[in-house]
Length: 170
Image 1 (tube, rainbow, N blue to C red):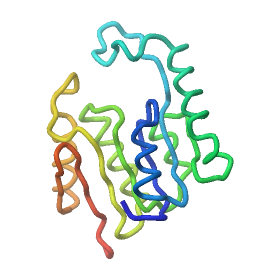
Image 2 (image 1 turned 90 degrees about the vertical axis):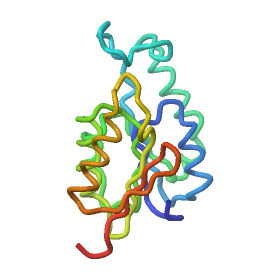
Image 3 (image 1 turned 45 degrees about the vertical axis):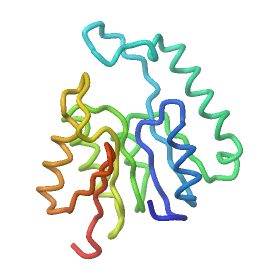
Image 4 (image 1 turned 180 degrees about the vertical axis):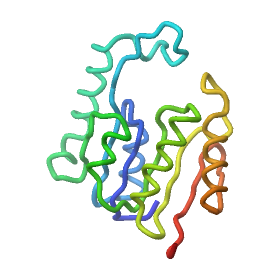
């Protein structure tokens, strides 16, 4: 990730990767986007041990606010409790975006399109769980491959992380 830029992490949960992004990318501003919303549909395979109740999700959100309190006070971290597409309306030009939220094909496809439009030329769009099947099937890989092909972007894969760079001139 470009250092000292403005970045967004979509899908924060407890903030473990956000802490790594702060340390590695040293962003001027890091936006953390997550709805911290309990999904109560018993047929939804995302419901598991970590999403016990809305009260549990509210507590995790509060823990994230506490974890990054010093950075929030300094304006370096901004927490957005919202769905990714809702939060996108609050952003201007971004240097990078890291996507690790809803892994379904449709959700990843929507996040890629929404946030690619906000990237400055040369900006980075990256994410997690590329090629890793799960309750989402292979939605991440399918959406990323389709998006990269449609935009004619070179795809870099490191383990299960993917990276796309917006051309300097389009």
